[in-house]
Structure formats: structure tokens, C-alpha cells
Image (cartoon, rainbow, N blue to C red; front, top):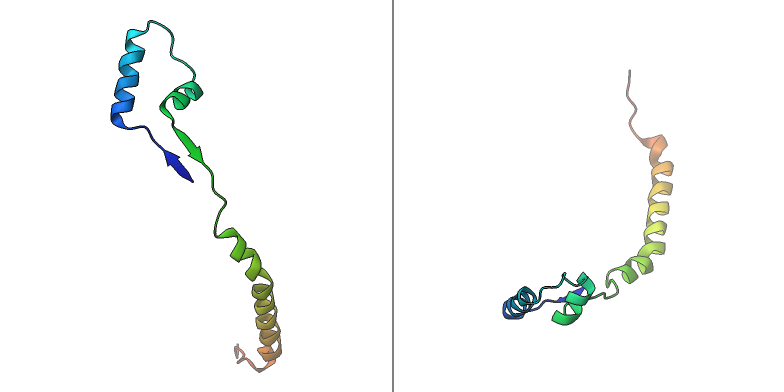
Length: 80
């Protein structure tokens, strides 16, 4: 997410101008528009590779579970 922020000088000039005008403050969207303050949303870069590797991760999990079940009878038992 990229955000553009107004400079300190722009904010000070805006506040001085607003202080001289005896009107109620404008809505936040109008203030952002006047100061050219916006947020740009970018698509998440890490979401696509995670979706690509999901099938191989599931295959690895299945293979590990199969080996565990095959080797389970040979595991040492608790003598109690």
C-alpha cells in the first residue's frame, strides 16, 4: 500500500487558511483532496506463490502421514 502525505508546509498553509475562514471544517475527504493525500492499494505480492505451492505442500503432508503409518508398527513401545 502506497500513501502520499502532504508536506508540513502544505499542512501549515492549509491550517492558516482554515483558521482565517469562519466556517465549519470540511469533511475529511475534502481535506484529503485539497492536500492531495491518498492511499493506493496494491495487490499482495505474496498471495500468488502461496496458492501455487499448496498442492505440493498437501502432497508432502500426505506422504509424511503414509510413512508414519507404515513405520508405526516398528516404533518402540512403552513396556508399562
